[in-house]
Length: 338
Image 1 (cartoon, rainbow, N blue to C red):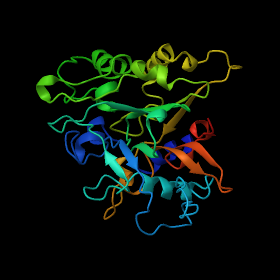
Image 2: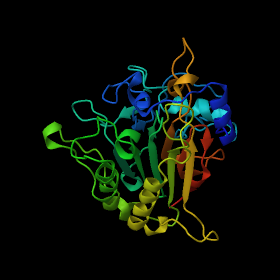
Image 3: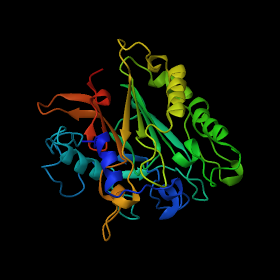
């Protein structure tokens, strides 16, 4: 399970001395490099119906291999160790070149100059005849957005040092933090972002407004995955560091998808789940071992969909699955028949 807030303080006392914003994104690897400490890795997971080698049955469900293959699921969704191993497996094990999952396909998330950019994509289930997955890895101060319904999914990744706390690499069109947030987050939700034509224009963010009618239904739910603390050179950063910006994201999403308007009445059902994660600190790393973001489920978000999932009794259903770090989220994990 996610470590409690009280442990954040304990870590600061026993020697976690903090980390600057630049360290999160550039002390070991710059945001522009292929392998970055806090890089987006949002994939389209293409599951091989014939299987891809031996699997550990203590971690994954398989179903009857002679029938339509079931979505792989953790055997015990309440066991954080099993869920963690599952999430690592499903998201490719880490951003080492050549070690991505053979079931994952990387979607373009950098421009042709290998510069990190805020990104978003979606899938509408009616357009998909086979199972797939989307995931983010390497969150270390960045923010993730996931919207799930029984009709589709929208996922976005927002760099901390572009959208919320500018560094010198923030694109030139955004001379201050407010314009950077509006131009790289709100504009993406409202209009989408193609990118600078002079720098290899690509679809950086799909417009949530454009796909909202195809995505909206009565089961829709949104997740905002946020750093519990901000950057700091000494000790842990302030808690809830970008609340004003996060509230604007939620309000904008609520304007586009009215069911997701943030609730002000505590008696109303809130269709938002916030997940504050603990960013990896440099001082946590262990000499001789791979970084925590590469060998654990910390900073990872996983979504999966299967239009032909078979339950243990053989019943065929449509199924979605959501896991954040080492926790399965029931709010976005649905089973249904048309």
